[in-house]
Length: 56
Ligand SMILES: [Zn+2]
Image (cartoon, rainbow, N blue to C red; front, side, top):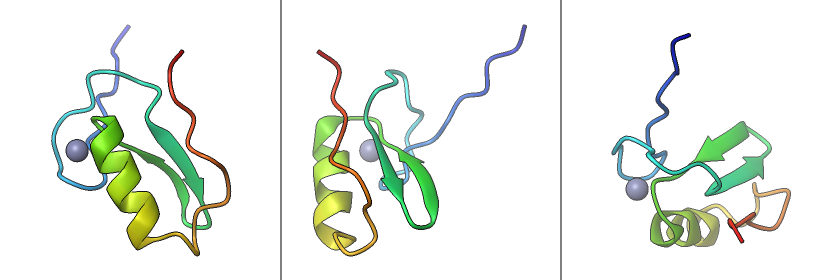
C-alpha cells in the first residue's frame, strides 16, 4: 500500500504529520506545522471555511 505524501501548501516541505489541515474554498490544504497553518490562515482568512484542526 503506497502512502501519498502531501507537501505543505505554504513552504512546500513534505507533510510528515497529518492534522495541520484547513478547509478552504479552493479545497483542503495541508501544512507541515502549526506555524505554516497559522500563516496561511492569516493570508487567506477570507477563503478558510473552518477553524484549524490541531492534533490533540
Ligand atoms: Zn510548511
